[in-house]
Image 1 (tube, rainbow, N blue to C red):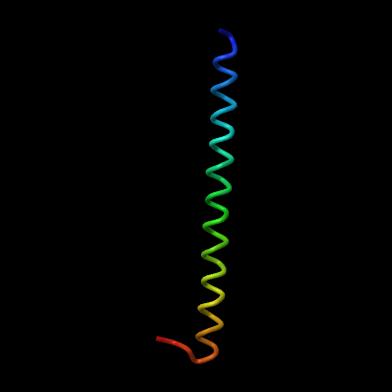
Image 2: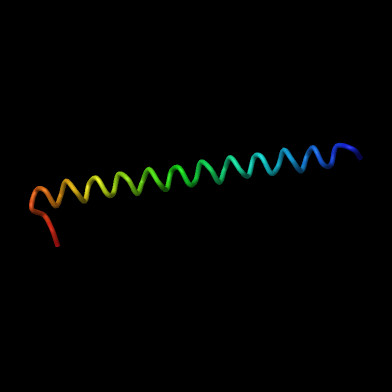
Length: 47
């Protein structure tokens, strides 16, 4: 039963990576949206 803390640590590390990748993908999507909005404003396509 000494493997339980190791398994929990491994699970936390995997969840941490999942959250980190999710935050990175959301930030990348926001950056692309911002760039598209800037390009559209420069082209005169503002709302």
